[in-house]
Image (cartoon, rainbow, N blue to C red):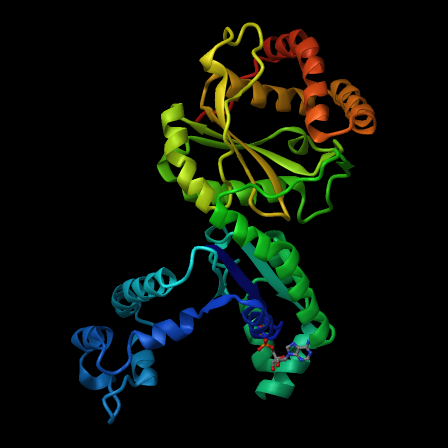
Length: 402
Ligand code: ADP
């Protein structure tokens, strides 16, 4: 199942985009609606709230008197906590029940106004942000919802701003113009990214990759490779829980200033490969299926002799819009150390970085496939290993604690 978190400032067009996604075939989980449903007359939820706050929170027709309940908990943290303790588990259970009825290939939209404020992005496979300028949003809300400029301004200043939203946006949908334009953008996004992503997750397969290696310039802020990597690592940390001992951005995209293939290399450290195997299902559900085969790193003198110490597990991205190579290695092991050391050496040594950049450019121009490109880089790393090792000794390099 593919979970999409949809957010945006008030009046930007979340409902409009949600409707377009539903038109494409998505299912909407409306948290507001569910929290009303679990307190309908005759529900265990309503009975529990009456038990907690007394019959004074009921209207004459025995339904919940929402304003009365709001008055009861307003400004009273303890009362609000008691209310949440009743309602939140019911909402979670009801959400789970609704999700259980959907097929494995379903796309689920969660309308989450406070995704940025509450740091909820890691809970979703994709975060879609709908954006429109403050002036456009204000005009729409005045026109369609009869809100005053003061009311609108107060709501806007209480929310995160677009700069903060842009940082977490896997996809930014511009709804400043005509509705049809945004709807067409959503339809293309569905076709090119969302539908194949959901299909890949259900089939536990990686997304297709370009046949030829192409170097890309580092992306502009706020969605730099570092920011994107951290967002994916947050998803992996959440999916893997305590089995994840370390989570790092490695490889060329982790070296500022280096042009690289637009593929994020990420490293998850685990206690042993049995733990890596235990993680396979959770990572696959999170959008990173494990690839079959025997995966291992090329041994380097002085770290460990050739053998199983260099074994790892390898996962790739199901998302056609964000290529990721996910290396699951034993934390503290030779492959794990080498990846971090190499990154730190390239970050620190300007000359090494330029030499590596030239090699990458040459190979990208002369090799016919991504596989050939990756294989052709290996001898350079073998040759430079004595220099990397000397640098590590000279600087007293140590990997981050885990
Ligand atoms: P949100 O759910 O983000 O608060 P809505 O989707 O409800 O925003 O949109 C706010 C208002 O603006 C609605 O009345 C909607 O019909 C209208 N609207 C949304 N997108 C457009 C657009 N591109 N052009 C004109 N009006 C729009």
